[in-house]
Image 1 (cartoon, one colour):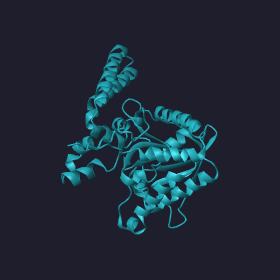
Image 2 (tube, helix red, strand yellow):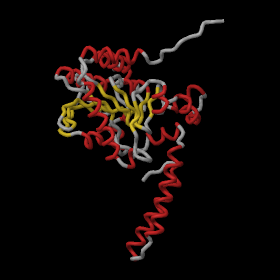
Image 3 (tube, helix red, strand yellow):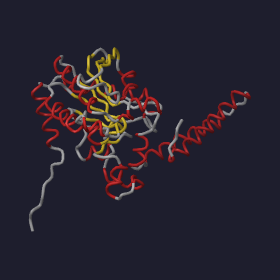
Image 4 (cartoon, one colour):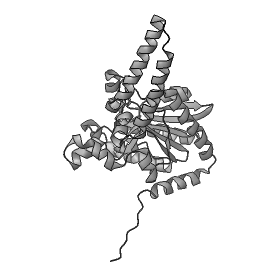
Length: 320
């Protein structure tokens, strides 16, 4: 398993436990007592390490190559998935996956960023950084969902929208802006999860909804820590300080009223137990869709509008 720097004490203990288990089975020697002690120690070390994570360390976990991606969650949570392709204007952007599926028999529309599991697939999917055609493809499925009265589930996982010349020439900013407008007025429930990275307008382009959740070790930010550091300090090495300043963790975002909740992850991150993580997300989907689908469509849009209007509201003391 790929390990992060702060996980070294955990990885060393896990390696030692595996070595003892292998030795026990190979030599037929009972070391269960020693193994149990190491497992108890491992549990304590894990709790201590992950209880005191810095924002930058959470960003590192969010980027862990073994974390589940959109298609993984679709496979674990949903059935009868049918993927739709193309924006009917330019092409098919594989950085965003859209389609129709079922959650315990309930029909839904699904939209999500998709990264690759190796270099070849990452190049194919542009590392989860969408082009304009990806956002326009998303609008296709949104309009279909509204027409057939289907709720929409969104998985956000992107460092940001693709900033290349071709994307700009094809109207990247206009495509994202149109999505914001469309999602703000869509008369069907929209449930959103930031499953790993939630970077900049690339995340916001499919991020307007009735409920917004961030996974425990995911982040949601106006810019990546490296981008922020490059702008403020002209030094990408200041990314840890930027992560602290950006208030990008689920806990910070909940306190600021940006999101509706934090979905707890297995100890150590979603990649440690993808099935447990998927079960947690599924329970939230089922609970919230039952609530949202009971709301009148016009009232749903009004509540969504009010929700976003409240973000960033402040009072100014003009005395003195």
